[in-house]
Image 1 (spheres, rainbow, N blue to C red):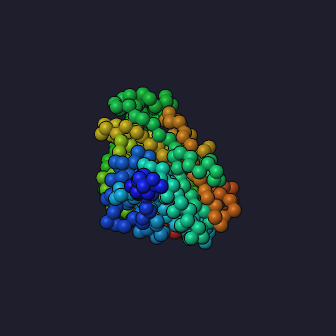
Image 2 (image 1 turned 60 degrees about the vertical axis):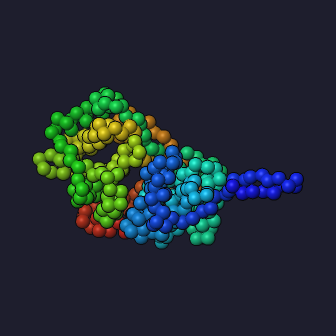
Image 3 (image 1 turned 30 degrees about the horizontal axis):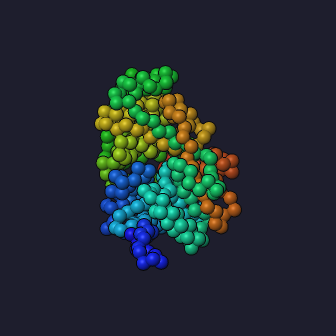
Length: 358
């Protein structure tokens, strides 16, 4: 507290304004303790480990800011800067992540972090500053109404969750069960990567590098899980999931062409839900999808309702909100061409493109 002398000689007290600092390695544990235990609005994507992943896998400069008052962290704001000839110069919380923005336990911390981010964006001369919020924060800023998320509380018993799945989708899950599919946990990313890379290639989307997935697994350890679906020893599909508090988040998933024939992806997400439920997790976070896409429809078919995501932009040098997504018509020709590339070539080139998309 600051002591403020008054005209009558008495003292009044004013709460200290939090100071803003850049995260250093020695403070990563304090940062994570705040994110996991002290701040209810923080998410898995506020964890300090993302600094390591983004810098080492993507080669981008990060600016992980935290606000501190009297030795206690009051708020965090992980930011990363992307400089791209093709896609521009941005400062974002947080690229490659669904949720971001400021996570704080006091309004004073929120305000100083916001001011610090805006000042940093101005100093770096970026095209725009982006916050990826679960709730609206800067309603006066331009926003993107493209993404939604799907989150739902699971029942405590697996059979209750099975019965909660709408009938047609439940039939697809049972199809996978009847096909004799098996689920196994994996420590190595190879089988997962083969299924994921094949899946995004069919969609015409560049794939992330193997290094990125290895770093996610190494950095987050037991909180990052690989589950592989097999039949007859063959990989059918795979999913990389994150665990945070009482939530499970299937984040990267995909399947081989065979997955469609045996309902491999349907079975995969059910197995993840079943396992998580049995381990005591209560929230199934199906993650982000673009409106009016196949992924959006797939998640609704499971009985999940879309919740809007508030992606807000403070424009600096840019004249409009960025539109770097596959639904943009100007990328249609690129997508069609990408789908025709041999898979090994796409896997070689893809990481150099996707690292700049964020």
